[in-house]
Image (tube, rainbow, N blue to C red; front, top):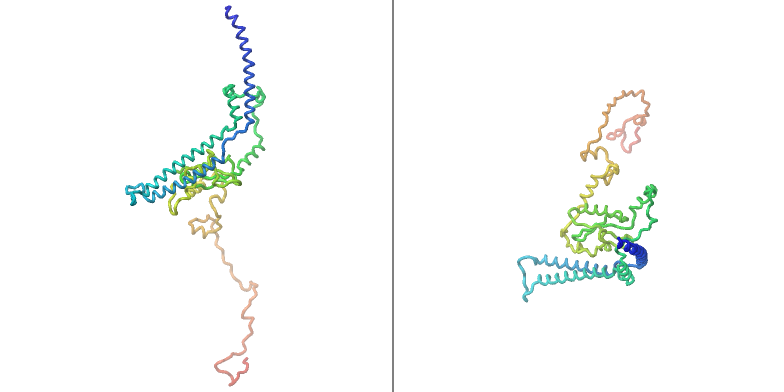
Amino acid sequence: MHDLRSRLPLALAALMFCQPVAAQTSAVCEGLRLRLSAVPEVIVDTAAVRRYSSAIARQNLEIRKVRQDMRSLRCDGSVVQYRADGTTQCGELSEALSRMETNRQDLAAKRDAAGRESIGENPARLRLLAALEDNGCNAEPPPVDEADLTPPGAEGPQPLDPENTARFMALAGQGNLRTLCVRTCDGAFFPISSGTSPLSFRRDAQVCEQMCPNTETELFFHAISTEESADMVSAETGEPYRSLPNAFAYLNRQSGEQPACGCDLTTYYRKMRGTGTAGQRHPADGKAVIEMGGAESQAKKGVKPPATAAEKPIEDRVYDPNAAHVRQVGPTFLPKETSSIDLKNPALPGPQPVQQ
């Protein structure tokens, strides 16, 4: 009992000593975080990454050409043609392909290294991160401002203003981006939306998948005013299009050669016309041209004209010439004949007088 009473003041003193130390540590961590937020951070050196990505895209094109040459020479067959010196063209192409693939791997490694080296390259930022770790600031949660907390009994979230909500919904579809659907098998792409924003990326990705069923696709985008289609980046990963293994591979397809994969846009648009929502349909939906033909054009297409009421026969009226006040023209206009002319039997020899 005596030992417990003697240890109690020591415990209270230690507790009182720890509280100022904890408060001081929290203040130090807060100051370090404020200084860290003011130091700029370079996430990635886009210029270096783009150079390596462009080189990888060009290397992919060369690899595709070599593989096409090997297929045309049937290098994977059982018959191999040797030259006089004992070498084969397929062997040379195979060695060149191995060198190209190794070079592509080296370029990809350098591209990834260029992205990693630029992260946290500021020495001041590195020192602040080390100070946060030494002071144990990463283990504690960041301080919460009590003014931001809602006091008990206060009102909860207020409903959205209808005017502001309508303005936000009106601006949701506006943007300066263009989305494109890319087939990863050969790098071919076609546009989906123009003048859109990131709010529409999920919808455009679904449209891309529906347009190319049973084909691996990915949604890309680029700025309309400042970038070209070749500068587009993935909406999912942020990787540039040039870094794809099959970027621009569709350009090397020979004339008449069938693509490795494809899309079915006709079926997609036919399905969309057949499954339109009832609230958004118009009289001209599903037609590109509104036909203005009558019953004859409908009969040619096998369409029955709409049923009409039975027409009553029209009765003939009795004609009475005395009751008709119609001006008559014709024979009564000509003068009456007073004599006849006989050209075969003239009246006198020589010049004939005027006969009446």
